[in-house]
Length: 639
Image 1 (cartoon, rainbow, N blue to C red):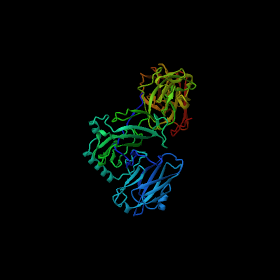
Image 2 (cartoon, helix red, strand yellow; image 1 turned 45 degrees about the horizontal axis):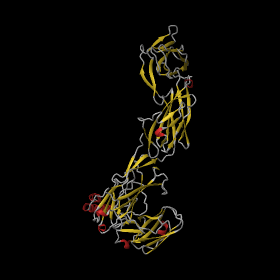
Image 3 (cartoon, rainbow, N blue to C red; image 1 turned 180 degrees about the vertical axis):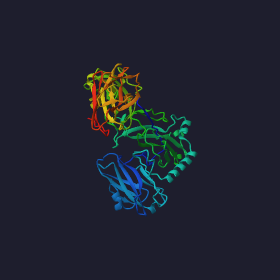
Image 4 (cartoon, one colour; image 1 turned 90 degrees about the vertical axis):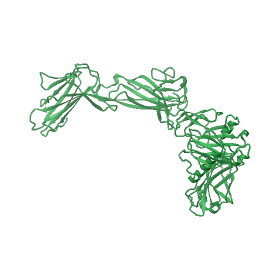
């Protein structure tokens, strides 16, 4: 079976000289400049601290990200576009590292082996912010910004960030919660107005004969773990991997100069988390990201005089909730110069084999069906084998192997029973049921559903009522290690005949009886019979004998079926020599269970306890019986 594929289009975009982006969702635009700051240290996020209670202050949380441990202490100086208050005790308590503030500068010492993120809490007098729309922090060519509230109230304050380093997007559900709706709508309206007056850069490239009509020079995707370390095999990654997408771009001189309002659109990958966002593209315009993953860049008047415009665009994400583990194709449909790439995505599941069992029917099974799921983690198996030794009292009969599809957590989504593997082409199996994968499955990362059918030996089945246990262990060798899974099932077997009763009807010493015949579902020829013998104190109630066909549901519960017809399916034969006996003779072959129901009546007046009994015997010699006491009150005590 073809592994299900998830197409994700990785389309880079961005046509501007970027120094920073205002975004809450893991988008990074970067101008190509050098930095003297340790590249492991970067600005991550700037947001308003809405827990601030002082009416004359606005407090902020600035997050520094340390990508990997640094060998020695590093001092970084961060510039802001407003002067800062001297840190208060409250600022220090909320911060996770020491810092000082002087005018518009924050001085931070990043200790060796610092944690992944450091938080700095600082305050600014509202009076100093009244003429600003944004507060911006700068570390060399890195910038993060936060929109400022337009009133004294912080109710509608925004939380947005931009950075030339990574900002993780852990959820596609947040939808830029940190951006105020009023400023968001204002930015969108400005962008739309610019776009209406501007030109599509793709059209400009096409008109200039530039092919492909794109500003994208290169695109790379790197899959990293939770600590930011790239997975050694970039073609085989877990579904919870972080996806880092980087593009380099440049605007060809063929279409220079650009005009204010010119724009460039592209789409982010379909298979990764998408969050709505907006921000600045350095000094050259604005961008928005829509819910469908469309990124829209609009340039301002500064591009009219600039040349050699180039830079990078970075987006952090994860595989989205719709991604199905297996082979996922990463495609860039609007960027024809980048061919699709394929990555094998593994589920978050580690159990290589599991096993369960059931019977062909219950009760009285003749076969055990073992179901074994292998390689649900979607690991790469080479020359894999599966052994499943048959339990004592059983014999291997057959095996069928189906490809199966698993979900993000290893759950089985579907089993492709329309396309089973072909014995001799895809696998071999020996007389004991040992499977060896061959052909295109000699090396595979496919998951399989393996169904063994085994026969229960006749001498294992009890002659009378009883249960039989079957237990065994299957072993998967994936070419590297052995993994086991065991299962156990109990088979229930019914008896050939059982007599039940008496049960009082509460009516004039009339009692109900029933006989369970052939509940072990054996084959009996026409002429087979049940002979019933009643004690002398009771007699058969005329016309009370009824016979019913019995079947069983999947759980072994009895289902009472159609009534058998006297004279067609059976006949009632009184014993001419003994009025206390009668036979039920079957006129046809039967292989099903039968329940016989009838009534007896006490012959004489009951003025004390009267023992009553009833016994049955078949033509094959199987017997059973039951007894009780008839009382003056009509109660029966079964013995």
